[in-house]
Every structure is written in structure tokens, then in C-alpha cells.
Image (cartoon, rainbow, N blue to C red; front, top):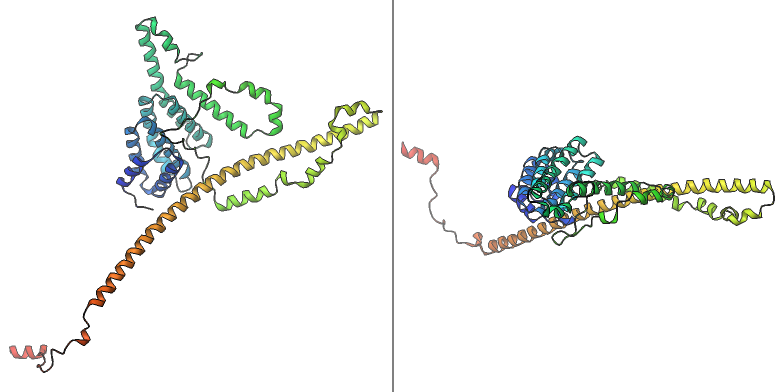
Amino acid sequence: MSAFTETALLKKLAELNSSQQSIQTLSLWLIHHRKHSAAIVKTWQRELENVPEPKKLTFMYLANDVIQNSKKKGPEYGKEFSHVLGKVFVHIGEKCSSDKLLGSLGRILNIWLERGVYDPKAIADWRSRLHKEAAGSSTSTSSNGKTNGNSEKPEKEKHKDSGGHSKPEKSERREKRKHEDRHSKSKRSRHHAQGSSSSSSNTAPPAEEVVSVEPENGHTPPYLPLGEPPEPEELIKALTSIENSASSDAVVRERIAKLPQEISEISCISKLEDKDKAKALAVQVNEAVDLLNDYNARLAAEMEERAKLATMLRDFQAEQKELLSQAEQRLDEHKKKLAKMLGLQKEIHDHLSNLPDLTQLPDVTGGLAPLPSAGDLFNALH
């Protein structure tokens, strides 16, 4: 991996785009050079304030990836970013008005709050900084509309919802509700979902409030990392646990398949002739219900485990792809160095072969008197 210099960092930040590969590549490079975290975060903040509005979101995605994935290595980045994030959110709140940008930053803050990345009080402060300026600009716009007369009132009302809240506040509340709803659905068991399907449909956000994710600068927005890449041992353990899952329990599945038809058909009740048969059927039905409830709970737990495993596999695969890319890059560099060394070796060999053979030169000292020794020279002076 290349050495750290501020020039190299500026170049990489300038080349950064919103693709997942670009963000992960630069994130790994920054984590590798975490001993320069203070200078890196300072440069990141300065460059974020100078880039166009769409790229500010890409810079925040980069910070989110570095903060979450560097926790195993050390707390350096988490502390350094906490010192500047307040100013960054104030800057974005003052300079940016895009609902898409504010909503995406709201999702990042929700994830930090849910995973305990930062203190809830700090996150609440950053959220207020992010929306304070936007709310203020909305208020000033409405006051200007009043001084100019009632002709601008319909235009002003377009930016308000039924409760009188501004668009950024509505977007933030909407994104938070979407995130909480998506998180609760992933943990809901199947039998609970069947019992509360009507109530959940009533509390779902209206269709017109769904925010569609559009491509940015020709790229799809990068994913928000769900967690740190797992260690191989953790991944092996998770894969092993799936082997003994409920869906592969042949014994229980066979018991369910052999359940009598009478317990699932209401029409069989009319065929009962006495009280004893009714009690026996009731016992069978209760046992079948207990069996199915237990198996459904196991299947729901298995679905949750498989979802976690899929996330682990995705993160592990992304990390391995990046490591493979770095290894291939290093291999190419070493191949080029080897080619240069082989070329230099050939040049040296050719140069040596062109030098004269000293053993075949004539004896130019033959017949001449030997040179005086140091002692002879000393005696000659005296």
C-alpha cells in the first residue's frame, strides 16, 4: 500500500466518487494510515467544505465507512471525527438545501444512534445543527412572503406539510420513521407478523412520502455498511450453525407431514359423534398447534440468522475483493521491479563481458627495477 502524504490524500479525495468500490478502497487506505488520523480528518473537513453539494454526501459516506470499520483497529478516527462533525453539519445546514442530502445524513445519524457509534446527546446536537439553518431559511422566506403580500402565499404553502413543519423537518422525520420501520420488520417473527398485519399496514408511511433513491453523478449511491467485516472464525461458526437449522430438521418436518387431516379441516367437526371423540380431537389439535408454533418460531429465528449471515458474507466478500485487488496491484508492482532488475542484470553482464581480460595483457613491468620501500625512502632522507 502506498505511503501517506498530504498530496496523495488530496489526489485520492479529488478522484473519489459515489461508487461503493471507490469509497471502500479509499476507506481501507485511510484506516491503514490511521497514525495520521488527525491530519487526514483535518484535510477531509477542509476539502468537504470546498466540494460541490452532491460530493459532500460522498465525503460523509466515506467518513461513515472509516468510522465504523476502523473500530477494530483503534479509536483514533472516531475521536478525530467527533471533533469536527459539529462544524461539518453546521456547514452543510448553511450551504445545502437538498432534501435528498439532508435525508441521507439523517439515515447516517440514525445508524450511529442505533449502533452506539457516538453518544446520543452528540448525535442530537449534530441533528439540530444540520436542520437549524434550513429551518431558519424557511422561516425567513415565509416572513418575506408576508411583506410582499398575499400573492406569494400559495407558493409558500407548497413547502409546508399539514402540521406546519418545514420540508427538511418533514424529510428527517420521514427518513427516521422509514429506518425504524425497516429495522422492526427484520426482527419480527412470522407468527407475530400474521397477528399484527392489519395494524402494521395502518401505521406504514403513505405512498407519497416514500423517497426514491436516484443515481448520483451516474453512480448508484453506496450502501451504508451494516457492520465490520467478520473474522474467518466467526464466519465459519455462523455457517456451521446454519447446518443444524430448523429447515433441515427432517424429524419435525416428518411429524408435521403425518398430522391427521381431521385437525386442519373444520368440516370434520360435524362428523363427531360423542364427547370423548371431541376431547381426543381437541388434544390432537392442541398438540399440533404447539408443534407448529415451536417450528414457526425456529424458522423465524433461522431467517434472522440467515439474514445476518448474508450480511456477514457480503462484508467479508467485499473485504476479500479489496484485499485481492491490493495483492494484484502489489504483484504487478513487484513484476515491474523484477523486470527492471533483470534488465539491469543483463546490462551489467554485457558491460562485464566487454571489459578487457587483465590476465592476457603484456607484462609491462618486466625488466624494470622494483620500487623502493618505505624504509629505503626514509633512510634516503637522512
